[in-house]
Image (cartoon, rainbow, N blue to C red; front, side, top):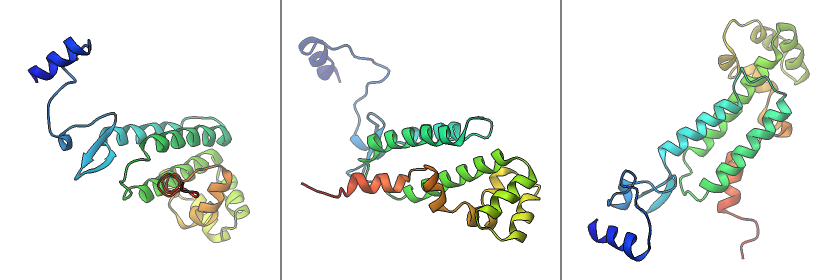
Length: 183
């Protein structure tokens, strides 16, 4: 460490932050939000926690904004995050992130509809069976639970959510790793 410190301060005229600096094997430290596991690059746990925290802010039940604005902000953030962290070769959590994101949005719609009659009317408009729509709308369970019921998933399908403006994390990852026109 001493020789590296001398080189950086004397030759390159850089200041070293002792709290952030260390000499360690590559797989034991993170760099700019990434870690290296068995020679492969992936995002760090801290970066992923921050991603989920920000998604929770954008899909919070108490953030009373229009769904268009919410989806616009969410799309901006997800697109930006994937453009930076998309170089990661770590695919396993991507489908789970998509599922979680869709459930968060269904929860937002459920909370926005607010009244039982509005929930029933909107679920019927989206093609849910009448009995399922009524039973789900009358449920005493919270929005997070109701976002995973048969009625909400049959009405607010994945296709419908994408038509509303949701962007898929999986599609972004595939676009980065398998571009249409490789040169």
